[in-house]
Image 1 (spheres, each protein chain N blue to C red):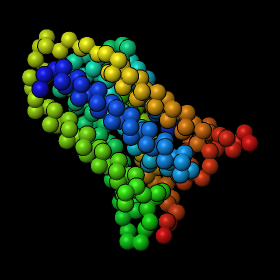
Image 2 (cartoon, each protein chain N blue to C red):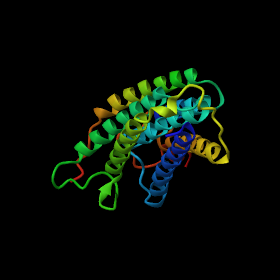
Image 3 (cartoon, rainbow over the protein chains, first blue to last red):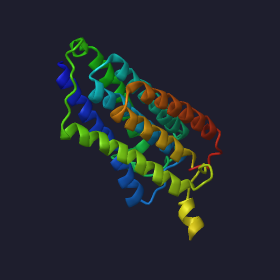
Amino acid sequence: MSPRFAITLNALALYAIAAVLLAAFYFQFTLQELPCPLCLLQRVTFSALALGPILTLRHGPRASFYALTIIAALAGAGIAARQILLHVSPGDPGYGSAFLGYHFYTWAFGCFAVAIVASAVALLFEEQFEEGSAAPQFGLFEQAGVWLVIALTLLNAASAFAECGFALCPASPVQYELLNSWG
Amino acid sequence: MDFSVVFLVFAASLWVAWRRSALPAVYLFAIGMVLTAALYLHHASDTLPLSF
């Protein structure tokens, strides 16, 4: 795998992360379902996943950047697994709506698992790490991916602020606390 | 408020990674991960209303 190809794959990873964050927003507003604390933590770790690809785009491929992705994905997978186990009892309908038969935290666990495996597979291709071979050249495609993920992370900060207000987030949110305090 | 802060820390980490150097971005990433772990531990002991 050439450094250029690795950079393109990392840009595509940014778009995949952005797609997940956009889908979470879409279902939050169309289904009128507030994300629970564990759901928000999974969104946080999706944002954290983006650091490795952004550093790869900016400085060229390095093994340590893939390590950051794996660390963030392991944290996200752990949080998603905790939520799956909370609702694993027979008869428990789970938290929130399901999509294609699986709840969103189950989908999130799958996405984090894919990120871990993809990073591990990418580490197998050592030619991308050759000295001096990775002069990063990024165009509109790469820049748009970076700014999209940063913008979605900031939008999540605003959404969480509207949901929780100035206090700590409630364990089981039922309304947008900030909007309610103004209303 | 707590989650907004963590999102902002990671947004700052991503921005620094893109516009500045790698090491400060990694430091911000580490701070964000510590805050994430703290929030997880805080909410891991939440009382769960039975959903069935």
